[in-house]
Image 1: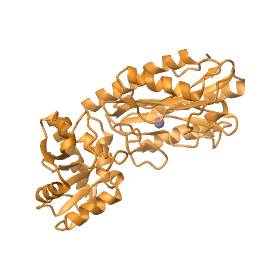
Image 2: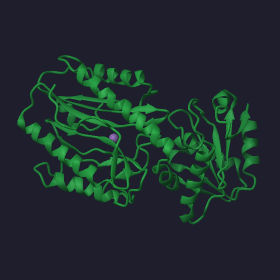
Image 3: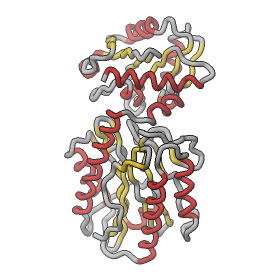
Image 4: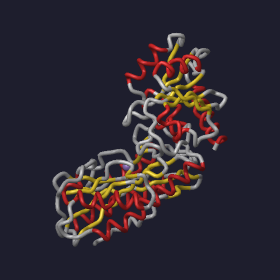
Length: 371
Ligand SMILES: [Mn+2]
């Protein structure tokens, strides 16, 4: 693990080479829960612990210093490869930070995941630092390319989510509510070793499927309706994200046609994925295909997003994405068509970019299913 962490730190610093001002050190400071920086966990590998308010300092040599409160010390001690500094009071914390960063002239901070209050707190504390630079871009770029340990976690996370699909199919019955099905999904993910869902599970029945980020309600399933489930597992902090749309009972040909179009779009997207291809080309192929059908304009989001420690991990497969696919990147491919007041269909899979094509992590058939 020691070498892996070192390689991660060095990878981030290698991406800072193109910055106008390169950082001498990078400080990652967590806020409270909901404002934790996942880079903190990327660069420590700690499996448990919340680490609210705690920090790490990363140096270009690959070294990491962890500054933790007493509360999280036991969790931190499971990472013997990292220098651990424990503080008991805020004053001690401040003195530690000042000491550790006394020689730093330009400090990198991750604006994407840093709260404004914490930014000001650091600026007030470290007056010796001439320049604070935003290292969000190099962090996203480095985290986008997964190492072997991360790919192992992502595979497992996707496997758990894939297994849950059988439970979903087995649970569909008349009058079950969206909320009930959502709780069955979350329970099934945890039963298999996930710490929980990777985001709020989406279960939509009937015309609710037309809303891409729908939140489940106490709404009952009736015969001959669409069922869309978009969910994922969080396993050792790594997120999976899968969507399947199935038919409960018999569905009219209009919606079947919509499904077949999304399925074709999904195949077009997956086929495009390999290293060296522009992410925007993958998106354009998918969108152009949908727009060439009668569903022109009804694909209303991007084709995919990177996954990792966050379910939306910073990079996208969209018209404007600057990303060029590289071996080891992890993305979703998720075309959809949405017809307001009628319904929507989305098919989403998780992939690792490989030289000759995608390694598909989500192992669930994409063919049309009637339950
Ligand atoms: Mn997604």
